[in-house]
Every structure is written in C-alpha cells, then in structure tokens.
Amino acid sequence: MSDPTRARKIADRIKVIVAETLEKRVKDPRLGFITITDVRVTGDLQNATVFYTVFGDDEQLASTQAALESARGLIRSEVGKGLGIRLTPTLEFTADAVPQAAEDIENLLAKAQARDAEIAAASKGAVPAGDEDPYRKPRERKPNEDFDFDA
Image: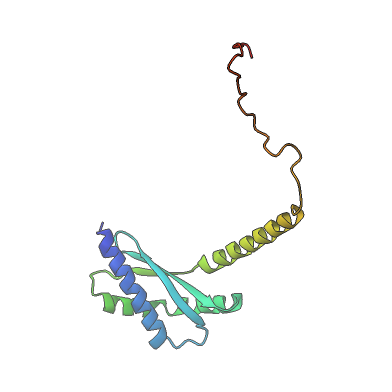
C-alpha cells in the first residue's frame, strides 16, 4: 500500500494528462464538451477512476461515454508515459453526479423559499391567540405575607 500523499499526487497528474490527451490526441467526433472534474486512485495505485462532466443533454453524455470507452487504451498509454511509474493504473471513466445533485439542491431551496414566502404572507397581520407573554412568572411576595409551602 502506498502513501496517501503519493496517491493524491498521482491522481492529480493523471487528471492533467487525461485532460491534455482528450484535448490534443483524441479526435473522436462523438466526444462532447467534456471537463475532467476529479481522479481517484486506489491505495495500491492499480486502478484510477476518472470523473467527468459533459455540457449538454443525455444524448451528448451517452456519445461522450462511448468515445471515452473507445479511446481508453490510447488515454491509458499516455498516462503511462506521463507518469513514469512501474505499473500504469487501469482507467475507469465515470460521469460525475455532482452537477445533477447541485441542480436538485437548488430546486429544493427554491421550493423552500417559495413556501417560506407563502407562510410569511399568510401570517402577516396575525395576532397571538393568548397573552403576549404566555410564560408563568414567579409570584411576588409582600413583606408581611406568611409562607405557604403547599402552593
């Protein structure tokens, strides 16, 4: 098992190499507007998962996945040349779910904000049902009053 710092450095280097390879060497027309967002390398440096996002719809995502699968060997050989380590990790390409999750959170926040505005509008001008201060206060004792311990 390798040092986690070394694995992180190798993952960063793989990210740069894959991005450069996709930009300069891969000429597949199916490849969409792709961004490499993250790379995670296992502790033994045998496998690397490359996370990416694609600008566009599901059709462009599917065609980009097919292009990456067909160019996997070329990309792996470039990673091997660029890393210069004994074993080149296998590459697995995974579409990053972060943009979709962020969009879902934004939609939920917008719904919550709209619901808060509805509640604020409904409560405008409302008055409390009971006293202004519903909490009991300690009774004030007069100096001549006898103590009643039962109360």
